[in-house]
Image (cartoon, rainbow, N blue to C red; front, side, top):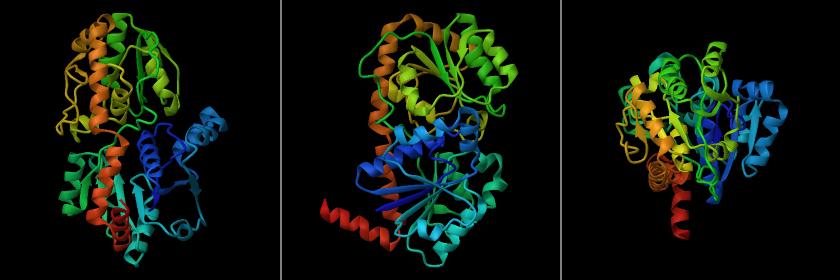
Length: 376
């Protein structure tokens, strides 16, 4: 089948973690013999910031890192109909401009025979309900929500059985334990400072424990204001700026441990939804300590796959233990890798997507699914 994905960006992951998952899903589809195309706005803020801060080479390396993937930019005058020619499934990310969302819905209502799905992976569904509520989704065949709590929001809006929980996951072609183990030292944190959504939490669960334990290590990410950089300078951690997601597994392999600090809107308004980084970290086998979040869907097992800290003192104690206990590190590493392999890879999510298509797909998709079953 032919899959077309409207995304904020596939090429850039600058402050755009959803690109990680979408790349993995498209790579899995390609590996199964399907064709894929991503369409992204030519003036998208992630791509613009990546080029503006890192240079054009950071944009161009996408083709080297992911040679099997294709992404095209669109703007005024772009021929969407031509790009959609032959499409079986069109997935539209929630950061897509409302006029494009509406245009695609109108095409579907007008008789286009592709299956049209809206993909929501952000807390705007609860933190900025009007932005999502104003989207013209009446032509869509279904909604993919990246957590059960977000799915329930769409159910309350009348989507009923047409909305599905579709969690993010790790691209295990990229995120996996190193082939050869080398000495690991210190703490790594890869995450963006952002808009203050977890500023207090980062102070309590990253900066202060690292300072108290005199932990060396590395912090990667963007949008760090001066006061955040000043706080990091009070520790032995080194701020190293942006890192391409394709380079993250090697960075994890050089460090002994990491932490997970979810943004406040997910903890308070959308319980059960971790960040994409938690999937990727566990897939790489680096021991993880998480700040509080309510794993209401039991995606992982605290104390088995990772350690959970309720407050800063407990985070400090867990990090101290990992810094001194090689057996504990090895056990958490094994368990985390096994849990991802069993439940949370992009291959699992593609399987789930095909189950959704079997329920909500158009006649065109149903014919393709039936033909594939016949061949199998």
